[in-house]
Image 1 (cartoon, rainbow, N blue to C red):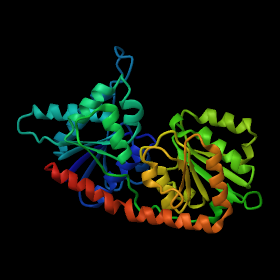
Image 2: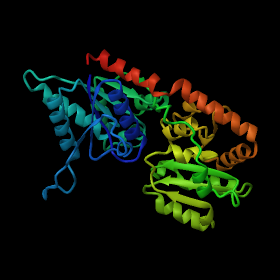
Image 3: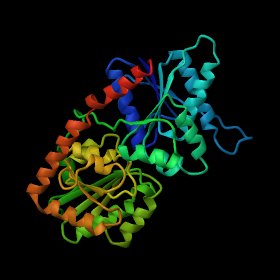
Length: 378
């Protein structure tokens, strides 16, 4: 099967999942092509048999803004022609579903050419924040409705798509997944000692994200500040994004500079997660919560917001702790209890890993995409 996967190259769950899907399809004997504006973040270290097709958007003085939808649609058409693609799989609706639709319609005009099926996978903010915005909603709805199949990464996102966009397309749920052989705890005493010197700290708290407002990194610092009043803890923030300066101000305001370290985005998050004691995710919205899944796989208890798809991923009190987004006191209290009670911490770490292994490994999820491709005649 020849599959063209369209995704963003920037740090974010949709690009990570799309990249991993392409890798696993290649591993399972399919011809996997990935189309993006640059090398996707998680593909840089190891292409894994995936063929990358970069999209170039030329500058032209007449235009004040890049014409990415047109250049992406053209690149999809070129790749589909050259490689005789069976499937165009667009990850993140904006603007990938629109470009995929346009590419398919162009290919329809060519006599004798193969017409690939178009699948759109919705990941979250492409619907909850961007796609439902009046400036985009009609086009996004049209592009989704004209897809041959639509998937969402959680039941919560499936409901949001129907309620916010009023789409007529049936939306099936195929959750995010991990390579469970790669995502497992691998403790590195040297890394732990550098990030959390034993003489100064008793616990290491971690947060990974793209530092967008929806991730509420300032709330991470707020929860940590409350933890720090009771426990000698250190916080590591790994990522980059528009709220980076805001977070630095928050750290400085509360005199936490010595206790907080900010790292750049990590191509391999397993080493960092493997030395952590707790993962914080107080997001305003998470349609799935891939970062929480990665932490659970590495036996790190998660304290998170009870929003979107997170209650589908985490079972409160068993595989994680869930609180309303504004309940920073509650998140801190749960964090303190877990960091103070070794038995409770160990039990939650164990149950989190078990939940991932039983429901979210690539071997369970990738075949669902393969079955969908075959269902569409690919």
